[in-house]
Amino acid sequence: MQKKPKISRYRHYRLAPKHTKWLKVLWGAGLLFVLVVFMWNNWKLWKARQTITEKVQDLSNALSQKDGNNSVGSAYLQNNIGIKDSEFYFEQIAREILNLKKEGETVVAFPEQSDFRSSPLSAKIRDLWQEFLEMRKKEKEKTKN
Image (cartoon, rainbow, N blue to C red):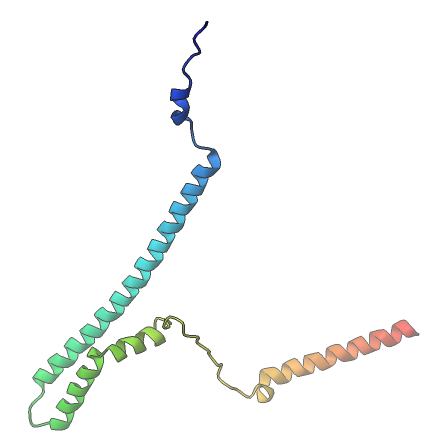
């Protein structure tokens, strides 16, 4: 009786199929992309917060330099400092400047209404359209004759 060679111990050394390697690379690239997007957004928020804190610091410096006699100016500056420290202000900045929204919220933007009919551009477009229609009408009449 002959002995069979032991091939079974080499089964775990088989290479993975090529499509699984590409799939792993694709998943890794996707995760890296998501990570970069999150880091970019975090950096933008951090930068906005930095500019706001710089403005707050400038206002507090101006407040400290202001005389106590001018109560209206110092009250205005103190009020602005209080607004800039609030979460409401950070949310407003995030909505307006960074175009962010809350989770589950739908945003609808309406364009500014302008009277398109009275603009000089619309008059030119209307004239060109009329000329085009007249040309089409003349072409149809020529083809009928």
